[in-house]
Image 1: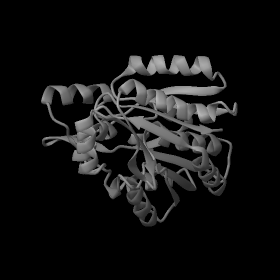
Image 2 (image 1 turned 120 degrees about the horizontal axis):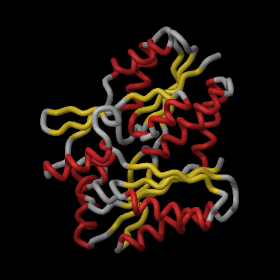
Image 3 (image 1 turned 60 degrees about the vertical axis):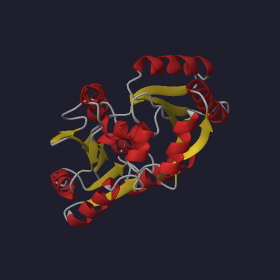
Length: 280
């Protein structure tokens, strides 16, 4: 049985990795004024942050139309028996529900939609695990079982420089954003029950990052095989130094660097940093 793996652009899996593992990607979009750009296709993360600076405003975001999912699933049905479709948290986007609806409409192929309950490369971890298993000929049921197992050990924490983006996008309540801006807080956020919520409020950027390190240390110090990703919003050098620091301390962990691309960057703003991991 051949199983196709689909994810959306907010996993920010590098193109070469997607091609190597045969992961199909459906893009979300950012809208500047009347101009619509499909992220990872028509606009890169670097171009997005430049565009925000030059225009002085943040765009709005848009999930893929259900028809795009149906089109992709029907195309995949020519070669595959099933699809596992991994998407960003249903608590912050309707993308997962779009995949579910499209799966019911695409009669020629069985679609298993998976709600990652997170986003960015932490979501990408699920798609990569699924693709590695599909390449070994594992059944969709076996892959879904493994993804739910991964969910038990997956963690992601991120720090934002400016709460106004989350407030404006409705991803954090206005009262929380106001308190944060008055106190110059650099909050650590995480996903709980599919939503972005504050984990702790910390007064400086450095202290916030050190707190994320401490949370990672709790798991990494156990010495089990892990995958971890450092995620940045237009701060590549900071991400590189974080990676070097963590590699020196925990060489048993497999590290990568990723980024908050246009859609997620719209809600977090430039300067955000994150760290995600799971036990292999």
